[in-house]
Length: 592
Image (cartoon, rainbow, N blue to C red; front, side, top):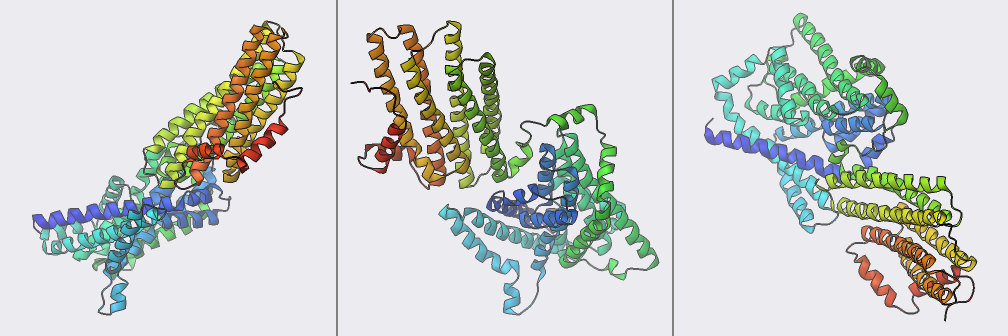
């Protein structure tokens, strides 16, 4: 093997690892968080947990990704530790599908159809189709990434295998694997390699490529495979750093499962080998044999340890003991625990968690506005204090959600996820501003109470109608955001226009009362402040609706749409506007 063979092997390894990354990332994006939702809604049935863990891992091609996601679920309180145990076991089984896919590269036959079934034969076709999908830059882009990733993966595997074949004639290389027949040494090598590249699927693939040299015997391969299962725990252990104790217990369960399973398997296997000589151990391993050993170990370990899942859970509690602080947090709960940084690696699911928080933020904002408007007419100190508390809470939601979305924006997002992220980021800003205006209204009420001021009966009646209209538009806008209803979103703009006209009418009526001496200039400033806040709240409701429209419509210029529909006469917009004006008609005679 010369220098150029080494370069080829290194390049093949790079392609292999990149292809696996691209394939896994594309599958996660295409799933759009659906697989994570399946895990999140898991029941306490352990067998179902194992099957789901295996299925999700087989789809996303990464037991590490599944396990890290589970650690995040446990950390955020979405999932109990008892549920996590089954999924972790299933993830180890699901990851074996990769080794079977890679074993297909070893197909040898002169038959055209059998040769066509070889991945290196059909992967170029997949690559061409995938590139076409990616260049179209549409919804099929993620599917294109999957196809290209698979093609690159198989090309890298074939390149590595071809470059390594000359190593079978190198004495030091063949002697190296004689050393690995020592089970303990082979175990350590497999664990170390997998911990470095943080993927058991990738390390098994590298081992399968080495088998192309014919120098790797089963005696060397078996302990390396077992070590790879221990090494893959490194990702989950790293993920547990800085997490809650329960999350760290989930990563400990993953480690315990693999260490105990490996110990049992090694002990039984080599004891039997001592009494019944396994002749195949000295034979050269092939990719199919590697896949068989990998699958056999993980399935056997799961079948043996599944009945003792509760014992693994208790052992994790023994290793990481509960303290008073943990008990207190478990009782109180973490307000923003679902926005776990571990979920950033699966953007679609992370966005769903954010969306749930923004919906809660919208509910709090609506509650704050309702309290603030009612307090204008019947001032209560405790109610004013509650508005302030809710406004501070909304500010905290704004800070936490915006910070999380900024972190998420640096990830590789699909087009739809990117649009959803922008919608959420803008919506959070609008909700925070609505709550600021609610606080302004509470301040107006507090100031009027302090100075013992009150509006005239007519002004109070008009203001109550105006306040009801503002409460209704906020309620409608929040519903649009929660349901993501495009038709309902279009109905917000005429409502906002009606509120603009209400404000103008209120100003005219106030000026009329001022000229007649029925109102003071000082109260006029307060009234103007209140109506201005009402009008700005309606503006932000319009923005919320536009945000939803931009999410749901391809190439939508929602603000241009708003401008265009305002110019129409006798249109649906105008009919809706007139309906709102009739519904919220101010009492008494209109100003001339």
